[in-house]
Each structure stands twice: as C-alpha cells, then as structure tokens.
Image 1 (cartoon, rainbow over the protein chains, first blue to last red):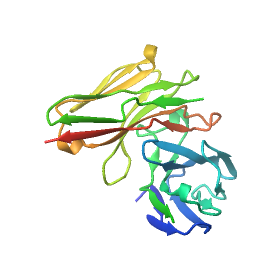
Image 2 (cartoon, each protein chain N blue to C red):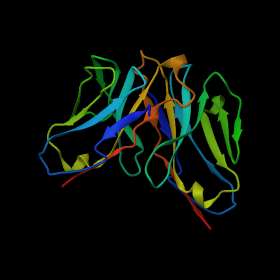
Image 3 (cartoon, rainbow over the protein chains, first blue to last red):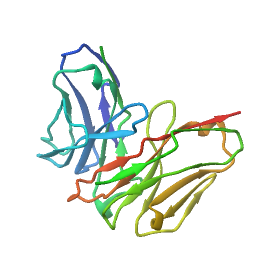
Length: 116
Length: 117
C-alpha cells in the first residue's frame, strides 16, 4: 500500500544510547520531514528535506541528525538519547505548491519513544 | 515565520451540543494552505480539510463545517450535534507549500475535545 512507513512503532532506550528511526515513502514525494509531538505542544518540526541530498533544520533540531540519500528514505538519528527526547515522532511527506494533493501531507503512523 | 494559535486547550461538551474550535494563524505569504487534522485516542493523524488562501469559500461536510476569514487570519472549525466518536485532539496547521519556503507545515498546539454521553 502506498504511503509513509515508520519503524519501529515503539522503542525504549536508555539514556546515552543511539538509534535510528526509519521513514520510507513510495509516492515519489520530494518533501519529507520529521515532527515530534509532546503533550500540549502540538507537532514541532525537527528536520526536513526538499529533495535527495538536501536537508535542513526545523524548530527543534538539537540532538537529532538526518540524511537523505534517496528520494524514498529519510531516517532520523538520535545520537545520544536523553529523557527530554521522550516523545511521539511522526514522519511526513508531500509534493509542493500547486501539486499538493487535496489531503496535503501524508503522515506515518508514528513512533512512540521512551528514554529512561 | 509562520505561527498557528489554538487558544482552547480543552473543550468538554455533552453529546448533541455544537462545538467550535478556534484557529488563528500568522504568515507573510500570500499563498498558503490551511489544514485541520483529527487525532483520535489511537494516535494517528486523520486529515479533515484543506483550505487554499486564494479560495475563501466556506465548506460543510456532514456535521463538520469550516469558516475561513482571511481578514482576521482565522480558520475555525465547528462540529454540529457532537457525538462521542468526535472525542479527539484536533490540530490546525498552516503550510506555505513552496520548495523555496521549505514546504514546512506548522501546527497549532491542538484542542482536546471531550464529548460526554
């Protein structure tokens, strides 16, 4: 099924551990992004990419790295996990401007991360 | 910079009451897109509606209606005759949707709606 696939769905990390959240889309969308959702704060943009080889920081980039070697994949790396990174993470993809479909952005189902 | 404000953090109503969710946005762009998403307790984001800045028609979809007022930078959402299944967190979001602007989607803080039977 076409869409955005995020793995894993749940993860528990110890402080200081590193890990990669995977995000893949099969819709040939140029734009991909990562958000974190914390209670009462909506979704905040961590990093985004407007195409393969191009990434940029969003609102809350500290502690996270991204790369975009292919159009399909946009992994998010936590370098040294901290309790403040406990959150729900969503990956999203879309097209641009007038090519934006009526539903806008396609979201993955989310990854619930707990750092202890 | 884009900003979306949902002043109501939580609204509690009794079933069959109407409920209106407020959304105020800020953007410097003349072309932008506004969205409403629903997040039920299961956690996924469910698309409800998209409104283009260049189309000011209001829209109704079943029990849902949206009032877009460009003059006051507002995009409010009304649920008529609420039902228990409407209990969820609702997000308003804004996008400039251009590659040059980074195509960023900015969310409001969300409004939790609790519909009691």
